[in-house]
Image (cartoon, rainbow, N blue to C red; front, side):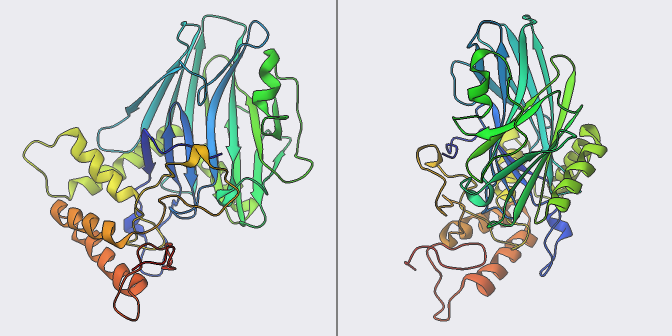
Length: 371
């Protein structure tokens, strides 16, 4: 299954100004927040989802005690903006009984195809331990994923058919790491007795899998997920981002969004929602097909449909929607984006009969049959 459409946040680095007509902008990763988890990491475009979730598991104490922030309620989750003028987030989660609390700060790296997140965990119960739970579904489906744990604790996920790799790194390195099949030998299954017993270093065959990393019970841990068309490219992206560190990446991320917003037409007293709405509209634009904005970065029915199809949800271009988005950018004073959208409509979507498909993939291929 995928994730539901009720997102609490979306984000990507503002690097649109570094691309061109025939050049993709750098930093093509887009993130989403669902409940208390980081979900739906899109790459290399806003139409392809590659990760279902990067979430926190807490286990220990009496046998069977376990907290999964994505599925079990009533875990409380609060999402905050780290800066009012950037799509950067702090996700706070807590055990309703007060036994533990956790924080996740998350952005994407403007300098690489990667995401970086810094996690903290505190507990009043020394028996409780935190774990990172990483579930890829490369190319929009996990059915052909292969997961491998390397000696340095790096988790490599790849799908030969999708030609996409994802590499998860942690600093400090995890004390233990394991991969397994969903609901059979993954971390959720392993931790039912309160302990991490398994350390499988690879799946025996491609399929729906997940990785689990044992995290420090005290202090902060930084995680980076890098993407690429090759394993080396994905690993280098994650390594470069982890080396830069969260603070440096975060400052770069915020600066770029603030510089973009400073160029816009401002109301007399901008409400925080003004900044968020503007950035969310911009974040829906692809960084390869400039001017192409999808109707939504989500799949609203994702939690009730298997991911063994090529369904992209609302991650398609709807010209009727894109028209209104272009008008919004004109009102904002961002005529460059509006012009890019018009050029995309004319050169990519418009048919030989001067019509437009009802919706289409980013490269202009019609999806449904209507005009």
